[in-house]
Length: 466
Image 1 (spheres, rainbow, N blue to C red):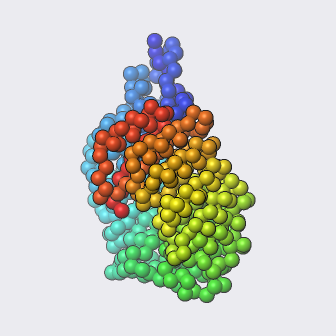
Image 2 (cartoon, rainbow, N blue to C red):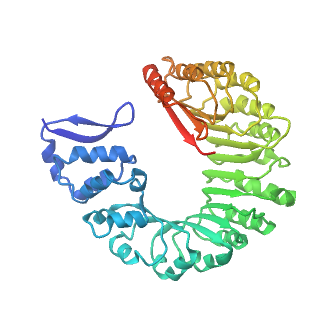
Image 3 (cartoon, rainbow, N blue to C red):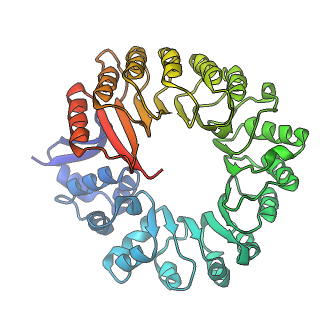
């Protein structure tokens, strides 16, 4: 019996195959352009390769065969859904039949600036392809700016260094398609980059990070306000070193244009102390907010504004108040059922296990789907408190313990709670992240994975350096 391959998700969202007579003939008649569109609409690399593998006995895949072969040898993160073009992948592709697949990619990421591959790119790139360009060697990029200016570069990532701090001015204004700009600064000057963004006719995503402690200036904030008022801003991320030294009125105006921007999808504010801001004027229109540096009073004020806001995802990192964060976190968790927040991450906060035990029950009625908490050591009492709350909650799919020292038996308590048969949620997962320096026995991880499978959920263990 022939098989009909169709994109139909099963209960786990995976592709399934339905059997049907005569499918071989139907698939064989499909134009390659149609197959290419189908394949490039699959977001997951493993599913895409499985789909191609099932097609191979029935269909001449043409250039998609090269994609399949690359999937058997390349890192999937470098291959799909965006193809990474760096020295290593160029060496793999150049002069081989596999390079024919490059023209079908709608999105590419390029990590070189010089002349070594310009002719190859001219030959093989589709002029409609959107390119993310990572520029580490600004002088080399400027030297070849005539070539790069003709490419459809929609995102540029650039490093500004002291010896080349002004050279970006000969590059960025020539890239007419850039809508997303990521800037990292290493002992350079960022003053003019804010002015460039404010005057840009197309930049709607701006991420800027300083590794030298660059202090944000009044003129930078003025340009930032201008940008938010001129453009339908989608993404903004930055450090606000020495922000508090600027006058209050300007800072309040800046916060209002950012937090009330109706088009904003993601906002990350690092070292942006909001302790003297008037939160009653903030609508929190952004879908995703990440605050690096906050205090308990900030959270109390934020909680009052959550009802009716557009906030879906909230990340809180690095509390700076000395008197603990209990009241702020309590206000936030109490307000969650009236909010639209489905993703919550709380890390680097000053809360004891006893504090968390008093707060955990507030999670029972929230609409969260994903919850991440960083707790240095989790006691049995706290594990039971979280387990009780999760078991009674009807929306939490993922509970992530970040850099948490917890006993295996306490992890099993949490696994049982999230796996409860009366919890009818889309997926169930306990994720445990530990520091590389902490030795976790492989046998313990395997036993937790097996236990989770028996209970009907997933258990994931990751390690991080810091």
